[in-house]
Image 1: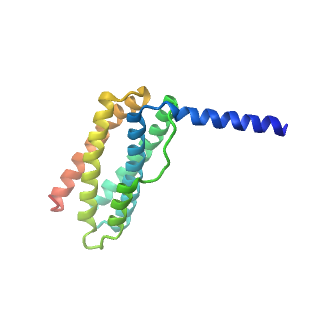
Image 2: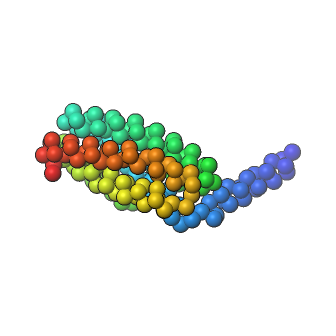
Image 3: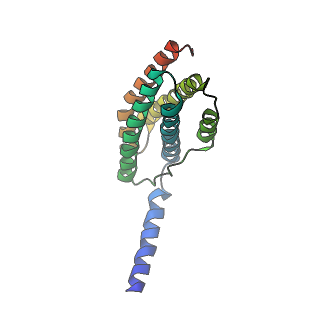
Length: 169
């Protein structure tokens, strides 16, 4: 029985490795970027729930957490359906540096720093999703990008309006 389990484990390991072996570079890059950006969006918004003073930013943070948590589940499902290995649930170097910078922001300047970080993140995300929705080679991820793009565009418009209201533009 032990030998059968070892053989099954080896086969499972080969199958798992093979899932991502022929993934197009565009898909891998998109998946890595989405995973990192999602963690940045959620974790920086969790900071905003604690430290933001403007009620509009707190409400925005609540919506970001809800929308991006839901999108993360849909993203993982699309990856599975396309047979693409899921990247880890951690931030890349740039997103982590932006998060750490935001985390170290003083309470008096947090609102402006958060608004600016969200504006930059959503501008980048909209461009990323537009590109993949138009030219992405993996069908389920392309459909995910098409479905999620209007939500990201809405977030971008929201943070632009909030930034104007709190005097950050």
